[in-house]
Image (cartoon, rainbow, N blue to C red; front, side, top):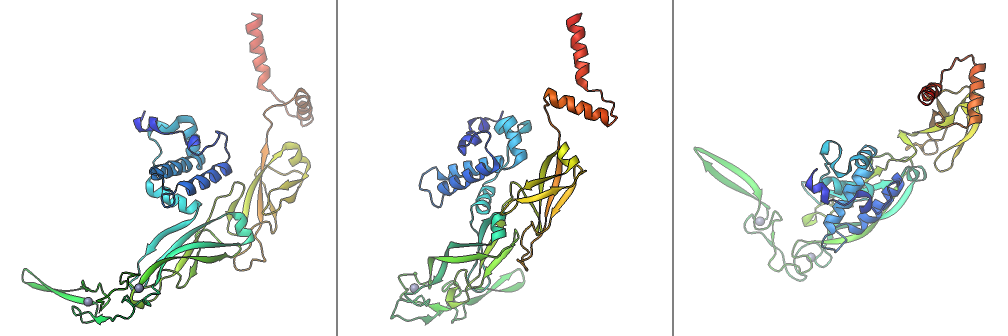
Length: 371
Ligand SMILES: [Zn+2]
Ligand SMILES: [Zn+2]
């Protein structure tokens, strides 16, 4: 066994869960603990290790295949290969489940774009969703108006690049001469020399500020869609244009429904008499359950459609997709004596010549016991 695996804490213990925890329990335990131990907010010296431990436990227990494998084989996994979960995966996981900032993209001219990942449930997709997110971004320094010079002091043209911000180098190698252009090293491309820099922003003209941004997500939004807030990213240096803020929608998997565009798909279990005779049943729906008529003679694998039981269409939210209900025929694992008798009679009435294996078992037992 992997010696590292032996020292690891039990995943259920890490998330403070019982072995029979549902997917929902696992997700909410993870959300709570990951928020608490995120290294950006937690001051404990082992916050990072705890955060990784929590993320790894969630990555395994939230995946049915990995969970089943963990339940059987423990940390080593099947064939002792373990579960390969990197640190980047753990931070990605946090952003997609709990929300938060992903990457910042540099732009050629102007401020960086920012991307915020917003996790949503299918219920949010149906109702629409409004929230406020805290955005930490660069804004123009108020003390110097973004100029970078201490109030009352002056800006001068950078003597090295004469205000151009770019310098050209000539390099000779072998018999060739190259000309290269680069940002001016003295003014870092700004073209100005500031003898007395602003104390608030150390001469950069920019300050970091956390602001609340109201985010409104339309009904029917799809996973992976981005909402753009023009100019909501970092302010640009030297008064150049600000980057944009993008809110990236991450629709979480649902315990009951699978999404197909604006349609939803779910499964219901049905007993043979219900399917054969027909019935009126309740099936899950968002937000309310639906009443569904099962026609007599419904087959295993049939899909029954509830018109308008799906999700709002993004462009026309007053229209909704359909809910497809897949019928699964359940076969009872145990029968009472009475039920067995009735089923036997039914089989007879259906002209089925049955040979249940139990009678064979009785015969063998009889041979052993009776000699
Ligand atoms: Zn300033
Ligand atoms: Zn310069």
